[in-house]
Length: 285
Image 1 (cartoon, rainbow, N blue to C red):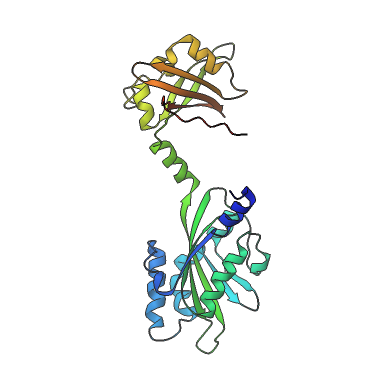
Image 2 (cartoon, rainbow, N blue to C red):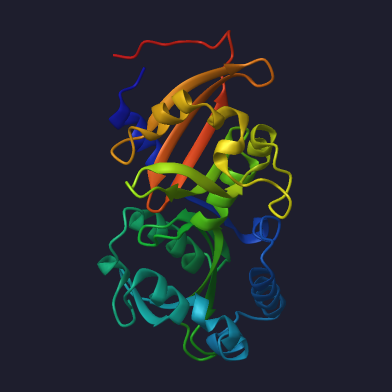
């Protein structure tokens, strides 16, 4: 088996996934990308599109776009959209691609060079380097002549969000096959957590708590069968807030469950995962 560094190098080769030319329309679904691509293709049937064809008529996309001037051997940022600047916290306007701090710069340059040299559209997916909330971007690259007389190439790059952490975390919470619930602690005069109000739970957790909806359910965590017993509660709460607590509980109705409780900021996060009797156990050095 290849060592981790070798495998990581292999993974990094695929940080950018790209399509070119006639393959682009078949992989795009974003309305803005489709509109810009259709406009470019319509003009290209008659002549090479120029900057004014797509830039001035599509100002609504400007905040999410980058406009490059192709030079040798670099690309100069003529425009860096407001929405993009706000996400990374600085502006690249007036700077060059070689000044962009990203591990995939060579990959991006390869896409941009092919789009410009072949004068063909490109579309690619790439992971974000700077954004704390954005994970995956889609980018449409359209080569444009500066004008009918000036044959230099500008590259319009329209960027759209494909996946953000909020959406990913929501999907992981809502659709997980492990029970997950979040509860607000109720403390006594001594500061000890005596109970907690359930403020959120996924569908799997409702099978454990018996709460179908917050409007009618008993939201006290200790009203549930699993947390009603003092010894289970003391075991799970006694370690907080220093470290997560883990315990295994077994019941005729629920079977065996691995429980973990963690205090994150002001909330208890409870996870329960069924334990299979045939679960595989591996010893890892």
